[in-house]
Image (cartoon, rainbow, N blue to C red):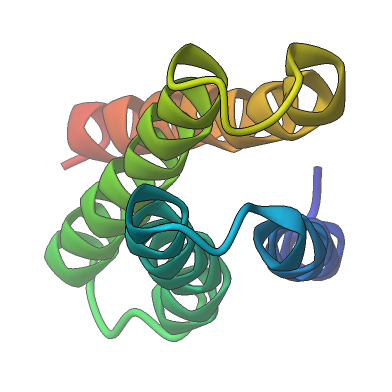
Length: 117
């Protein structure tokens, strides 16, 4: 996957999560998780864009780690939404897959960058 495709993919992921977050119940737990999932999913997209402007290999590796962490955190919140019974698994499962795929891509990219040091 090339840079523009990944930029679009992470942005589309964030947009889909924003819509899903609006569907969460307006309870204390629903609101708390909605805030967290919105923050982490939009951070994936924003930090991926920053990664694309890395100034050095070390900067690239660092920024890749940040995006990887945010994608993994998004996966956690999505799992918690289902486990807490806030939303049906059928609604969340496609987003969970979409959060896990960039994580795997970024892990591989970071390992490659480290190996090329």
